[in-house]
Length: 288
Length: 179
Image 1: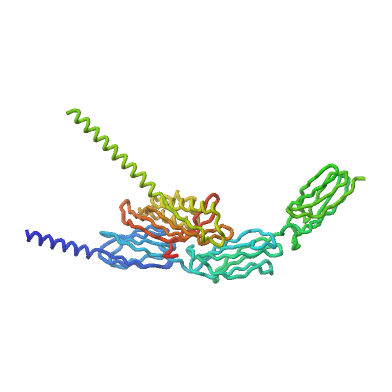
Image 2 (image 1 turned 180 degrees about the vertical axis):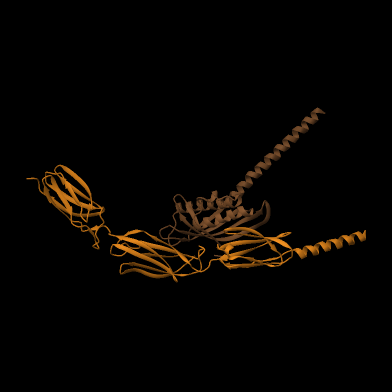
């Protein structure tokens, strides 16, 4: 009986020793940079299977235990958490975090595409730096924002990204035309354009008189308060009030001027408006 | 003798039916548990724009749906469920993962997802939202049906969302070591 027990104990010891010899341990680096090779070391002996599961990859390959395992940079493009698993008789695992590489491009969103002149805080933009593999870079970076309308500088400021984002807000300039919006990090830049258009009409004035068919009225050239011509197509409303009642005519601005023809024989009072802006009143006598 | 035989058959049938019902119930509940995604969202720190309650509800709904869709895609190795909730770089790498899984025979199963989400940036015009998500789940990885990894996981994700035509879509989904 005792002899049997000794033999059994010896067999167990040998099995345990063999198991310990073949058991692998896995050492995975904590971090690696996107696109760089990484090396994982394993202990043990014999053949095993390596699994690499991460963003954009789910890959398995045969490996020799006890030797360094090289993971090529092409498998580690996407920033994120990669699970490295090595299996033989049992499986061991570790996590490798891939961090973004250096800034390569800027995602730059600017609003709006058209803006009236002279509006406070009407232009805004957000910039996110990305590396060459389109990973968001969260490490603080200085983004320079510049807004220029012709020779007029509307904004020039530097901001550090926070959580990967930098942003600005600016007022539009005084002249209609294109605003060049530029964001840059080191030697990387992104350009956008915002069209500044005239604001609401200012000092809307009309002239007019009687014709054979009634009354013809027209505006003087329509400008905003900064002197920018209001775009063609903007609607101007003429309203005539007389003994026969009220007549309203909507007319678009063409080549800077809006015109309207009204049928009225009696004395008429003509007023003009565009949007929320009122112009002068014109009194025209009855048809002789 | 005949009566004993009939009653034995009846008892066997009842037992089989009961076991069947238990199995069915277990399958339904486990499926429901697997697909459930718990999300706690805090939008109070969103800057420079503050978030409207209605928008907050829409983000919560769409974010939860996106994670359920991602889990489904990685488990079934099909990209169908990714169409809609994901765009841009997030969509690209998720598609690559699924295609890679199809080739290698690997699949991933995310169980009992629990997300603690905080908004950290909401752009002035409301067209970009950045979230920080601390997610916990049970990650099961199988190779050809054989489970090779089954462990609880805690990960930190930086997420960029933009409003789409009818929902918020995830454009960037990037795990980081810490916020």
